[in-house]
Amino acid sequence: MKSNLESYRQSREVLLTSIVTELSSDERCVAVWLAGSYARNDADEVSDLDIRVVIAEPYSETLCERREQVSHTTTSERLAFFSRFGQPALIHENNNNAPEGGTFTFVLYSDSALMVDWTLMLQRNAERPFQSLLLFDKANIPVSPPPEVMELEQRRKYVAEQWAFFWMMTAVTIKYIIRNDNVFVTRWLEVLHGLVEQIQRQLRGEPLEYMRGSLTQLQPTREKQIESIRSLCKTMQELTPQIEQFSRVTLAPPQKEIETLLVLASEEYARD
Image (tube, rainbow, N blue to C red):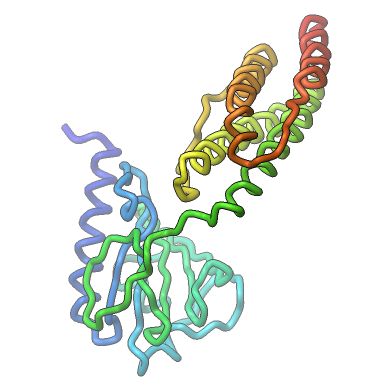
């Protein structure tokens, strides 16, 4: 017996097949690819479809028309285009996320609750990202080169700056532990873990990378939050000699000051 999640995933695959079949025979569409989790090969049962559609020049003026930068609706032409695959229950258009001259529209489809990020773009300046999953291409759209690692001097500056930013936001996060603002603390514990990860990538000479989802587990108590901070600080302290050697700057972790703040947080915890 299929679970509801498995049925949802299968419905998404049926929708994707329908989109490819319909659009590949549509003269207005010259290329289509998937970005997002499909492109990274880490799609799960609830991943949305991040679909990029290159519109042929004779039709782009209509289908890529922008009437508003951000809106709760879209044009009648795009609505008809999206509605070929189901009745939209919700539309949110945010062209700040669109390529030059293109449009970006989120559609939540009725009944199925499937989500599609539709990006329509002009053929004349279309470029398919290196990390994408091609569905079809009638026009040999150029592919962007793989992401480049920063120049060495940029990496050195980036690593040193992010090291300082880590310690700054660690101090700030402890302040919010004392204030019992668990929402702020949860968000910034995740950011601090991300900073450590990205610094390590730069030290290894790897490009910065999008990281989906959470790197950490929820720390629901002050005791667990303090424990997480201590673990992060230990990791960053251990990285500091490598960061110094790489960035060619002398760094002094403010561990004494961080410990002072952690003692304050622990004392407040003991009083609760």
